[in-house]
Length: 340
Image 1: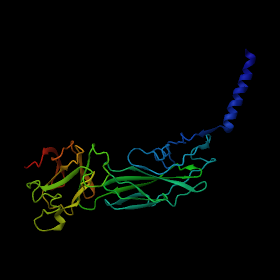
Image 2 (image 1 turned 180 degrees about the horizontal axis):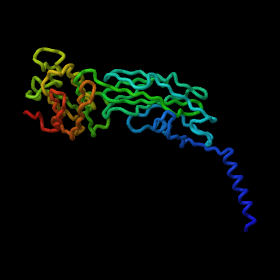
Image 3 (image 1 turned 45 degrees about the vertical axis):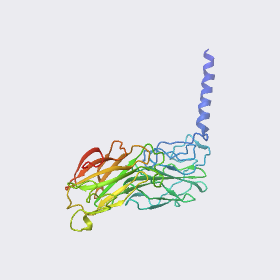
Image 4 (image 1 turned 45 degrees about the horizontal axis):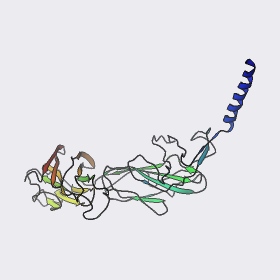
C-alpha cells in the first residue's frame, strides 16, 4: 500500500495549485454577490437586488428603484476593496451628511455626480431606511431616477441611502443623508394614529380613514369649551392679553389617515399647565384606533405616549405639560369628554 502514497500526494498538490491559480465563483441571477461590510466602516448590509425588482432594506421604509438582474462574476482571491479585476461605481448624493429642516419642508436630492467604474450608470437605487413610526412620506423620484424629493410629515429622523449600478455591477458603499426634522415653534404637539382595520391608511379622501382630533386646554378649562384648542376653535387666546405669541394654533388638521394633527404655541413660557388629549370623532367603520402623541419643546421631543385601542367617541387624556416644561403622563381613557 505504501507505493500509492506518492501518487495520492501528487494529485492533491496539483488540485490545490489549480484552485489557487484560477478558481472563480459565478453568482447566478438568484444569488447576487454580497459583502457584509463597507470601506467607510458602515456596519449595515450592502444594498443588493433581491429578485423582485426592488432594493432590499431593513424594513423601516419603502424600497424604491428598478433592478437589472444580471449574473455577477468576480475573482474569489481578490479582497473586496483591494486591487483586482473589478471596481465598483461610486454613488454621490447631493446634499449628503446631516441636515435639519422643518416639518413639511421639501428637500431635493440629486445623484448626477455619481461616478461609474465601467461604462455608464445604468440604475439609481433610493432607499428611505429610517423614518418616524407613523410617517406616510415617501420619496418622489424623477422619471430618470437621478433625483428624488422628500417632504417629511412627522418630526424626527429620516435616513436616506443612495446606491448605483454601472455596467460592471452595484456599488459597495451607499451614499447617505441624515435628515433631522425639528419643529420651529417653541411648543409643538403632534398627534398621529394607526387603525389596524384600515388596509390603506395612505388614501386621501373624506371618510376614507378614521378621524382623531387633538385637544389642548389649560388646567381648569373644559374639554370642548372655549379654551379647548381643537378643530372647533383652531386659534385660542390663552394669555387673555391678545398676544399671538401665546395663542394656541391648530396648525394642521387631518381627517383621512394617520395624521399628523399639529397644535403649536410660539411662546409658552408664561402659560399655565396644559392638559393634552385626543378623541376618536369618527372611525369610518374601520374599528378601533391607537393614538400616538409627541410633545416637542424647543425642537426636542420631551414626551411620547401611546394609547390603548380607542373606539369611536372615546377620549384619551395623554399628559399634562406643566408650566416649568416638565410633563406628567396621565394615560387615561374615558367615554366622551372627562369633564362631561
